Image (cartoon, rainbow over all chains, first blue to last red; front, side, top):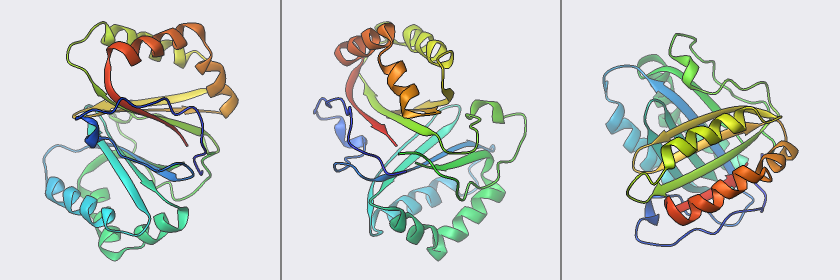
Amino acid sequence: MIATPRECEPAVVDGTSSRLAVTPEPPYVAVIFSSIRRDGDHGYAATAQAMIERASAHPGFLGIEDAREDIGITVSYWASEAAISAWKHNAEHAATRQHGRQHWYAHFELRVA
Amino acid sequence: MIATPRECEPAVVDGTSSRLAVTPEPPYVAVIFSSIRRDGDHGYAATAQAMIERASAHPGFLGIEDAREDIGITVSYWASEAAISAWKHNAEHAATRQHGRQHWYAHFELRVA
C-alpha cells in the first residue's frame, strides 16, 4: 500500500501543471474514492470544497486530484497510513462522510493503495 | 504498493454501478494516470478506447475507471505488479504511450500504488 519509486515518466512542466498533485518522491499512500452521484447538489459542492480545504491542512496531506464525468474520481495522497487514519477520524470529516453516504452518492468505492 | 483489506465502505448496488470498477478482495495494485490534455483530439479518443479494450483482455487486468474534467484521472486495477509490467511492455501499448507523450498531453503523472 505504500507507493515505491518506479517508472514515473517525466512530466512536462508548463503553466497548466498546477492542477495535478505535486507529490514528493515515494513512498506515499493514495486514497482512491470513485463515485456516482445522485441527481441534485444537496449541498455537495460547498461541502466538498470545504473538506478539500480541511484535508489540505491536515498533517501528512500531500495533494489531491479530482475529476467528474460519468463517474467521479478523487485521489488524495498522504505521507503515511497513520496520516490517513487521523484524517479519517476527524469528527467533521466523519460526519460529512456519513451525510454523503445518505444523500450524495448512488454508488461509491473507497480504495487505499 | 499492494492494496490491503480495510475500510471499504459498502457500495449501494443499483443500476448505475456498472461504471465503477468491480475489483476483487485485495490485494491488487492500482495504476493512477493523471493528465492534462493538449487542445484537439489528434486521434486520442479512438486510441484511448482501443487501449482500454486491449488492457481489459490482458492477463491480470481487474478493472478501470476514468473521468476527465479540468484534469483526467484514469485508474486501472491489476492483480499483480507482474501483470502491470507485462502490459507496460506490450508493444502496441508502448508505442501508444510514446505517441501520447508527444501529442496528447501537456502534463501527466503516472503513479503505481
